[in-house]
Image (cartoon, rainbow, N blue to C red; front, side, top):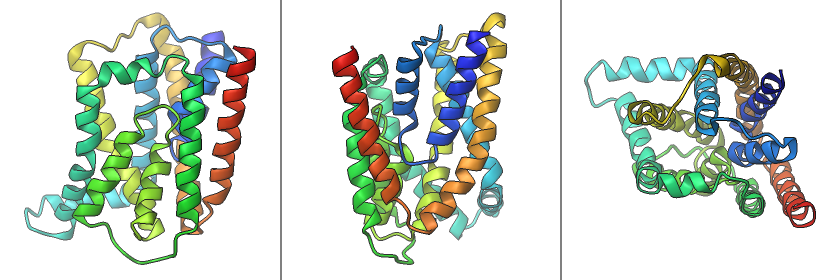
Length: 264
């Protein structure tokens, strides 16, 4: 029963923090640390929770996804094809870093609480700068897509918010805030699905009957919470309310570092 409860808690944390710019990976590590919970297969649980939030994104942004897919099947140099190319370009930095340094990155997700705290401060700094940026109507260019992709690659580190870093980078590039959020949420879909395919083909994912039901509990918790968090975040970014998340990241990052230093 404990596995069910812990996985549901981690699913809720993943569903909320995948979209809120406060680092899902960092909060998952903090949650496991404070719960004293070490999943039997952290990789499988991580993939399951990420797939759940991908489905949440598809549910909330289904109109955009359908429009892009419809445009692609027109086989013309249209807006949808250009958008898809920008998404591909944005994926390249994180895909290259993930492929070359996969094992080293995995080692950073093993109770590195001080690193998580420091990276939450970095996320807080980015959000603070983005909150002060002026409103514009600029769309994402090919160059912008690559630069946003670089920030997504940095977000492979635990504690650096993927949505926070990509949205902040977009806003600092003077891209429209709502456009920035939508692009940020859509650009991660192929990356996570690609990671899932890689792990399945390599045999790294292990699933046994005893763990399947607790994993499903975590999956549905992340899926349901993710739908609400995705919609909520789109509205928050449009209103430009990033400062509150910046303060939150500074506070939680500091508390995490203090907890690790004094509690071990």
